[in-house]
Structure formats: structure tokens, C-alpha cells
Image (cartoon, rainbow, N blue to C red):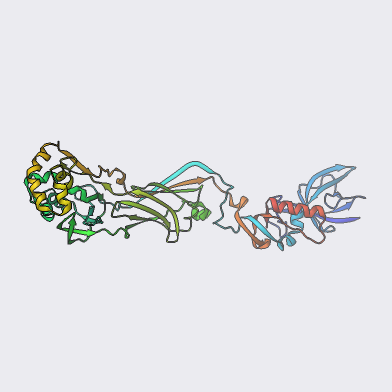
Length: 468
């Protein structure tokens, strides 16, 4: 049976659906009359070409209209004074139209892709680009007048209130409670005749629960009568509400990976991007880049307990997602001291003089004063003075440095969009996504195609092919 076969010198990828018609300028072609063998495979035919030995056989592709199939030429052989051509069916080209009508789950595509899908095909180089974005520190320190002082004062009844004041006001208060005037007013309040020696047994520091320096602006103050033990002193202060912390918000513009525009927003998550924030005194906190991926800014919200100086740092991605929460000591304790006769408060010191304890307890303040006059000298001179202190010495080392966001960007190797595509992971009609494709779980149902041809199409589509 004689039939015509069209031969081409055709250039294309073996995993492409491209066909030679219409002809590309570089494609040469010719039609030869051929003859079929007695037995011949439709998928891998061997055809007798009725041409002389010196005929042009510089062709690599053919179309057999009688079989309605395209073939790759695998061999030309001259025997029995004839040319024989061996072919292998090109199922992608033969069923190009039917493949285009298939809806398949497309894993990768050169035509369309989702920039939010991480592409693990390209590894990251062992090279990192670092960027640092700093903001001004919210803390005030550097001089003795910086910040403010939170002073816990015990009033009559044992209630501790916290008052915020400047260093000058703190010094004014300390000068007052360590003065003869304060000692005299305490003794007078208790109905005891004041003696100069009595100052040594008055311990006003017992009414100071704590003193904490805070690196925070004092703000507005008012002249307020503060009761320190039994004595009232007018001081320029601001009340520290334990239930209302002082808040500060730092905003960091979240940087983008330098290849975001080219490859997609997935470049802004690990392992391509690493983010960390340094906020003194909370240290360095790593940020979950996946949780922060859609945020344009990272907010650091600091809340300071203005009574004792404890702080909480909350990191937020935009205004919705909390990324981290850490605690640290923001304020520094302040140590206060005075020299007293050890073992003596007013009552204990007076108790060493004969009969004073009983007189005071019974309300006989006159008797107490009389006993004090006769016994206080012995009480004082019989003891070695010592220092009474509250608080401890703090440090501001952890407050130094400007808050900053550090970004480390990993640079992946060069990509090859045309031959590898990028992740799409969506169902698409194949003809709508030309170029390189890789599909998953393709179901092939093509009328007229052999089982071997459908298996071939499925294998190509799931390992990567070109729809042209």
C-alpha cells in the first residue's frame, strides 16, 4: 500500500506539543511516496521510502496522514536497494488539540504563577545580605536629671502609694525627712517632747517602701500634700496609677526581600528572609516571618509599670497579629541610706529606757517624755550607730542602644522561568497556560489514542512539558 509521508527538518523540544505547520522559516520539508511493510507498529513504524539512494534524507520528523500521527525519526537505514525510515510517535504533537482541552491541576507554570507559594526548587546560597532599620530610643537617660523617680511612700494605716517626681523633688523630700524639723514633728505628733538626741532614733526610711528610677519623662505634676509616716509634706509630684502603665509604640517599616518583585512575596518568609528586633532592655527577639508576611509594619508596644519599673514588650504585625511578648526590668532601683542607732525605731529605742514602753502603750505620753529625758542619752550612747538602707544599686547598661529591626536576606540561585516555571498549584485549562507546565494526577481520555500513547502523554504532563 503506497501513501505519502511529509518529512521535516523540525527543531523543538521532545516534550513539546509544537507541530511544524505552519512552517517556521528555518523548517525545511519534502513529501515522499512510501510503502508499508506487511506488519507495522502504529506507535513505532518502520516505513519503506520509495526514493533513490542519493535522495535527500536530512530530516528528523515526519507526518503520516494515513495514520493521522506525527513521528520523531529515530533512524534511516538503506537496505535491499531502498531507504527505510524508523519512527516513534510524537503523542504530544499528535493530540495537541485534545491536550489543550484538558483541565488539570497545574503544579508549575511559566505563564502564570502564584507569588505567595514558596518555590523550593532553587536553593539559597550561603550568602546573606543584611539591612538594619533603626528608630529613636524612647528612653531618657544620660544625665542625673533624666527620667523620673517612682517613690513608694507608706502613709498612716500602712497603705503604700507611689508618686512620680523629679530628682530635685526627691532630694527635697530626703532632705526634709532627715532633718531636725521632721524628727521634731514626728515626736510632737506622738506627744513626745523633742530632744536633739532623739533624731538618731527616728527612722523615716521605714516609710519609704521603694525608690525606682525610670527612664521616662515625668510629665505634668501638681503640688500635693504627701503623708510620710505621720508627717505631711507638700511636694511637686504625679500619682503613679498601678493599673495604668505608661505606653510607648515604636514602628518599624518591614523591609522587602530584594527579589520580591521578580520572584514573589514568598521571598519575605524563611528561609529567604530572617527578621529580628532589638529593643533595650528587652534584648533581641526573633520574628516569625510567616506570621508577619502580609504586614507592612512591625509595631513594638512597650508598657511600663510606673510604680516598680517592670516592663512588657509586645511585637505586632500591623495591628492584628501579636508576634511575641517578653518582660524585662526597665527601671533601676535606687538605694537610700541614713545613719541610726541600730535596733531602734522610736518605740524600740524608748523601750530601753525604764518604763517608756508601758507609758506609750497606755497612752501616758507625758510619762514617756519624762522617761525619755532621763534614759535616751544612755540608750543612744550604749549603741554603735549604723547605716539603714532601702533598695539597691541599679544599672542603666541594658537601656543603651537604639531600637532596630535587622533583616537578613538569603539570595537563591538564578531561576529559569522558561524551562522550570514557578508554582501555580491550581486547576487550569491547559490551552490557557502556554509554555512550560508540570501537572499532577492527570486523567487522559482521548478518543483514538492507544493506551501506550495516553501513558506517554500522562508521563510527559506530570514530569514537565511545553504546550505550544
